[in-house]
Image 1 (cartoon, rainbow, N blue to C red):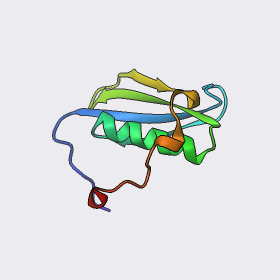
Image 2 (tube, one colour):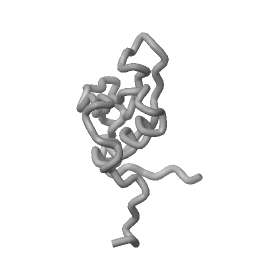
Image 3 (cartoon, helix red, strand yellow):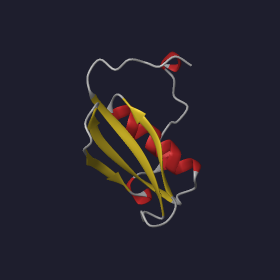
Length: 92
């Protein structure tokens, strides 16, 4: 799989936390070029894990060591039944 070059240095990192606690099992889910992609993937990951994980979205810039929290998403923050995970541009 070829690596996609990022034009701008801004990236969004999704981290999943079991039961919303970083002292329990937690891991990085992925890195995305836009906040919208990161949010969608965070919601998909949370739903796939049946609400056992909350998500944190971090904002960072390439070649910098610092990340700041952009948004924390708790399972109760959204209704997964109203979110179309399979929506494609060809369906519209």
